Image 1 (cartoon, rainbow, N blue to C red):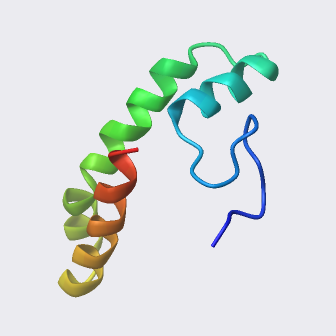
Image 2: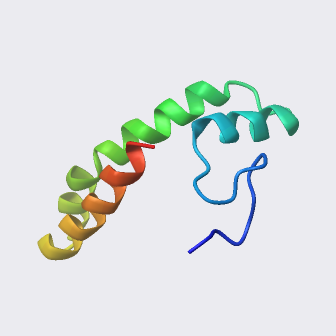
Length: 72
């Protein structure tokens, strides 16, 4: 389905372009750096999951979703 909110004119699949537009609209500095840092943290999800005791099946399921989102 469709997202219930719209980000910079995109409701179906907002991506980095729309996030940067939104950051600019709200005066957020270093939007690209913030996105890069979030991507880095998300790409290390399995390490964080192991360290905090998240079950392997759950960690793998979440990792699949994160991996798909990082491709956007």
